[in-house]
Amino acid sequence: MLGHTLLFHYADELQRVAPFRDVLKGGQTAVGDLVFNIAIRIATRLPEIGVNIFFVISGYLITSLLLEEERTRGVVSIKAFYVRRMFRILPAFWVYLLTIFALRTAGVLEAPAGAFVRSAFFMCNIPDACDAWFLAHTWSLSFEEQFYLVWPFAFVALGARRGHGLVALLLALTLASFWFRAATSFALIACGALYAVSARARAWVAVPVAWHGVPVAALLLVAAPFFASAPAILMALDVARPVLTSILFFGSLAGVGPFVSALNSTLAARLGLASYSIYLWQQISTGDPKLFHGGAPPIVIFVAPALASYFLIEKPFIRIGHRLSARILARTPPR
Image (cartoon, rainbow, N blue to C red):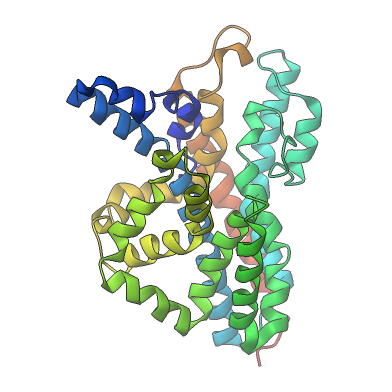
C-alpha cells in the first residue's frame, strides 16, 4: 500500500503551478522554470500511479493464492480465505481506528464521529463518506475489501470460465468509468486477477511489453496533468489506466523496462513487508496543522507506531489467521 505515498497528501499544493501558456508567455521562459513546471506535474501523478499498481498487485496476488490452493487441494475454501483475510487486515486497522478515536476524544485532533463508522465498514470510497483527514486514506482499502467480498465466491462459481467472467467484468467497469471514476479502481484489481488466471491475458500484455511498452505506458500514466484543457484526452487516459498499469507492472516484473532495479531492490522488499502498517499510520504525520490542537507532529512520528503495528499486531495475527485457516482446510478434504 505504499502507492498511497506521502507525496499524495501534498498534491493539491503541487498542482498549483502556472499553466504552460503562462510559463511560455513572451518567449522568454527560463529553462529552470519550465523544468520545474514539468517536474511538478509528473510528481503529482506518482502517488496515484503507486495506488494503481497496488490495486493490480493485490488482484494478482490474491488470485494467485486462490489458484495455488485449487491446484494443490482441488478445491478452494472460502471460509479459510476469509479467516486469513480478516486476521490480515482487521487487527491493525482496528488498532489504528481506536487510536485515532482516542486522540479525538482526548482533544488532540479533530475528526467527525460518523467518519469512524463509515471507515470501519469500508465505505470511505463513497464520495464525501469520510470527511476526516485521518480516515480518508482508507478509501483505497475500501475498494479492495469490497472487491474481495465478491471475488472469492465468483472464483469458485465460475470455475474454468473465470477468465471470461473477468473480461466481461472489465468491459462493464470500463464502460461505467466514463460516468463513475470509481469503477476504474475495481478494474485495476480485476486486471491483476485476470493476469493471474488467463494465459491469454498474459500473452496480450507481453506484446506491448516486448515492443518497449513499459516506458510508453509510464509516460502515458504521467501525462494527464499536461492535458488539463483537453477533457477527451484526459478521459481516454483515465479509462486506459488499468491496461497501462498492467503493462507497467507486469512488464517490470518480467524484467523489462527501466523500473526493474527499483522493483527488485532490497529497500522495496523491506518496505513492502511493513507497507500496510505504514499505509495506515503515515496519515497522522501529513495532515493540516489546523487539525491538531497544539500543532502537527513531525513527519517521522508515524514510523514508530507503524513498526510497532507491524511487529506486534500484523505478524502475530497473520500467524493466528494461518493457523486457523489450516485447521479449516484440515477439515475440508482435498479433491
